[in-house]
Image (cartoon, rainbow, N blue to C red; front, side, top):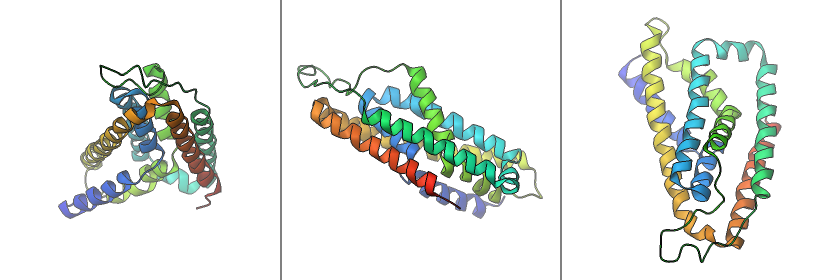
Length: 213
């Protein structure tokens, strides 16, 4: 892998990671509801799934999906179902007015405390069910690996580069979510936020289900 190839990978990954998608939305909404600490747990869940998919890609996932396109279709539909479920869950999430609880202190969380394990699992499933991430691992990443050179060092460089860029964007979205938290202490605003994020998740699910390529 040449230096120019690596820089091209950096630019492409920066743009792909910056594009709003289910992973970034989940990190941002988690930060808005439960704080940056919970968003970090969500990031860990997302990154675990992404790194696992890329590791599997190095073992030949791209060839598998090209040989058996029905496998990708199954993954796509399963992801659509999960995102639709998450959207309905967000839409129906209970709210309470907390405007008075933050007086004289720091702003309170915008939602009830959720176990870290549950947030981690949701982050893992959101990333694992995202076709964009599957295609990135199966079709995009292998194109930057020179088959005539040692593959492991190239894979480590690309994986490290991707991790730094992806986590950097996660923190951008998490900080944005934290800034939203102060406005979400009013029940009516929180309900609107829940329905907006739930609707976006359902929209992602519909786009996944309708995709054919």
